[in-house]
Image (cartoon, rainbow, N blue to C red; front, side, top):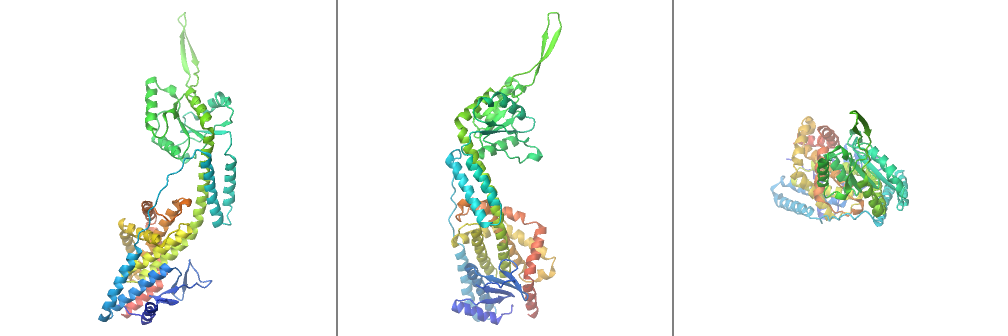
Length: 534
């Protein structure tokens, strides 16, 4: 039977009777400061300090105060039940209160509503994309005042604004190795580009699908994707990605002359079938930019044979006709669509910087709450009350991380997210798997393993960390302008699985266990002393 701390009993009885918490109280060697600030020079991480062999946790969050306070009070009532039969009725009341408290945390939140993207190829869409990128840059400037990144990105955006009415066009030529990109550019420049009033440029990308250029960026107002025959899976994937990104693309089958007439129709039909729903048939074009020379034999009257090499004329008419039509009908839309994509790229760059800044602020908060969860669960031997305390901690974690990422949550929404994270951990088997792993690793440390509640405390810290990191990854994947505190639970679950996998390596878990155990070591020592006395 556990030894009852009479001083603690008196403090908690005062809390229950008056409804006002004391300035601080100790549970199993953990000092809980309610609404107090830590003195300067004693802060190690977030709001946590170490002093005189104890972990001091400063609680200035109403959800934490309520949840952990209720958990501590109910633990006291449960302990007193075992000290005398006269406390049976009080224990029943305590368990009923625990059940009611848990039900309160499980309230539901609204569901996510998704909106479809707007069309891209118009001036209004281009200006909106620029304004959206500018808003993200402004957020970055506010949250990272000493960084040069906002000024650099603003300069790129200002240049983009001046190009909304440009007349010249960039037609990018891309494709795999040895498909005839260079030859096509040369023929277009000499036989077609000079006939148009607009200034046309034909930048060529490095060959795609080589290991060193697997992630080569393909841009431009219009893309000519060149292939030397039927497309491969890699080519199909790249074409699909370009089309889905709003990039105007023509699929150009070059080296038509190397196929027999019946083969030509088969290859063209195959290309049209594969690209159905991605590109129109009029944007799939067969050409021969630089046909192979042929050897001609001429039999003379005297019986001799003369041979000569005859160069073939380029077969570009289908392509040049299509390009002329596009430039006549879509030139301005191509410029605006390019502006939309470039603004999106600038926005992504700004968001990446912003996410790094916010992550640096969020990680210490996660670490703070993981230690609070470990201390609360270690000090509380009743599993039902552990759940109440950790749910309160998780809810406050959701609210605090949401504030960093400007995701506005109501209390009900935060409770639902915390409950969903816990529920998904159980459904996915993460709790059982992690607890078994942590238990096995703790057995290598006899002192830590012997301490009552060590496995539960460290597991609570680990699950709090997984929940926090999952929220960070989820928030970072969301559009900043849609930060309304509404969750896509399916996406959150996928993120949870990915984060768990990344943080399940034995080397990481061993370091994490040692880190948390060192924080709990004063409580472990005191717990051992109490057990020895009993």
